[in-house]
Structure formats: C-alpha cells, structure tokens
Length: 171
Image 1 (cartoon, rainbow, N blue to C red):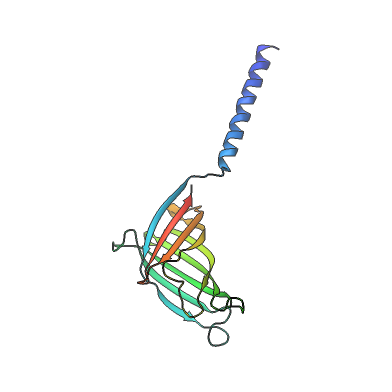
Image 2 (image 1 turned 90 degrees about the vertical axis):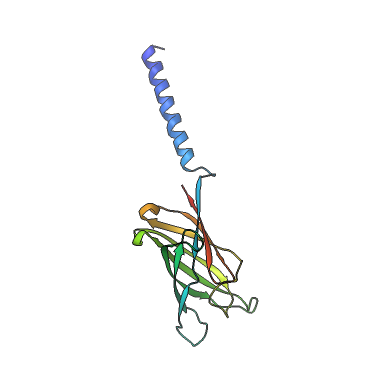
C-alpha cells in the first residue's frame, strides 16, 4: 500500500473515532449536573373553584411567592404558578387527589426563568402538600442564563409554609 493511501486511512479512522467519542459523550448515561438551592416564602394562594362547589376536576389554585438565594436573604426572584385538580380521590384512596403544578421561577426581572411542570398527590382538605415530604417535578426549560435547562426540582415544604427548592440541572 502506498504512503498516500495509508495517510487517508489513518485520517479517516481518526475522524471516525472522534465523531464516535463525541456522540457517546452527548448521550452519556452519567451526565454532569449543576445543583443549586432557592428558598421560597410561604405562597399567597387564591382558589378558582370551577364546576360543582368543593373539590372538582379543573379547580385551580393560583399562587406567588418571593424567592431568596439564602434563607432570610434579600429577594432574588419570584415564583408564580398554578395547580390544577386533575384526579379526584378514589374509593381505594379516599385521602389523596392529584394536582398538576406549573411553576415559573423568575430571576433578573424576568430575564432568567426556569419552568417546571409535574403532578403530585395532595390531601383533598389542604391546598398544599404535606410538610417535610419532598415532591419532585421535571424542569421543562428556561430562558436567559437557564436557556435549554432540563432536569428536576425537588420541593420541600417546611412546617411554617415556606419551601426549599433544590434544582438539579443537566449540563
């Protein structure tokens, strides 16, 4: 085999290996993550009772709360959102209903946002889930410095009604 043919084969093999390595890295089963915590004040809530009086499908709680990067620190953002009743209690589980919760975490005067959405179980008699029982929801995306965000947020309610929001974002 002549020298030019050998060089072409070596270059082709090197390029192929580089493409394969890059492709495997993109779909790695162990991606790197970024984790950060936001502290949320107890939310101000408003119930929109649709349909029959009392709990019925489509009832919506709208809420908002101030966000802080450290507990008791200055306000760094705002949370606005809604939770919609999507599944009523059943005979098999009369003390649990399901609500779909959409949350907009906004920072930098709304330029940086993280959007989350997921369903969780709630007691039919309270607007919020139980204290000290974390609820995990997917991150749908974001804007500004969070553009393309994906991952999850773990929300933990404190007995005083405030929340700790722990974001785990894939890099």
